Length: 277
Image (cartoon, rainbow, N blue to C red; front, side, top):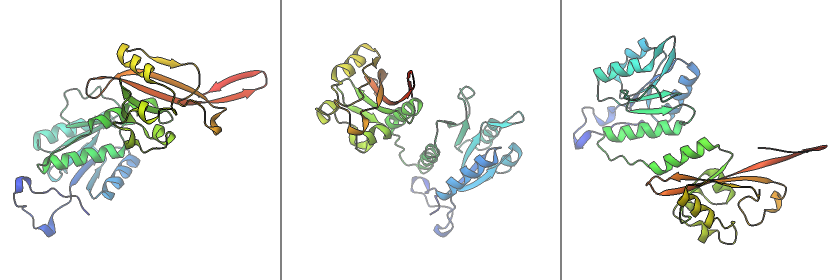
């Protein structure tokens, strides 16, 4: 189904229902592979995409788009912000999303949203487009800031690490996919539950460590290599763990703690005893 803007504030649409147009997204990127992939993903979601690879080409379509997604660095000394500035002057109501590998150029820029390459997924782009759709349709926009905030922390730590975020009482604020899979529950199961109550007798007693990290802002480095459980699982007896608990300010400004765990692979060779992450 094509994605369409509902008429704002209950007004009748200037188009007949049978001719409502899909949302038109201008895509600008000088890398053809990136442009093709982004176009394919958005078209699968029902967007009408206008792929362009140069400032001149993108400029020709500014009067016929609903949202612009512009790559920052286009090569040859050209930048997507040139298109953004022109679009903002010509049609100030059109949302602009800038994609780049760095944030440093965008303080005070004209874009409505900036997505950082390497840290923003296709899902982030789709969520951003949906948010702008809702705003254009005069609908309420609800953003789960907590999940976005913690998922970025987990992404920075690495997808191979088990990442859990707690408040000072041991209540889960976040659990990434790796940790949830290891603990054999869905990620949403953990939110609002307390580790001391739910995992009593299974998990090591993290009560004092989590509370101390939250209270004093100290970082705990586990040198026992024991992992998360009181006793290792049968298939983990030869594994060695790296566990770190460090302080964080939670999404609601309370003190919290991030518990990360990563398996170290033990390798042995004649006359040596070394570990690789």
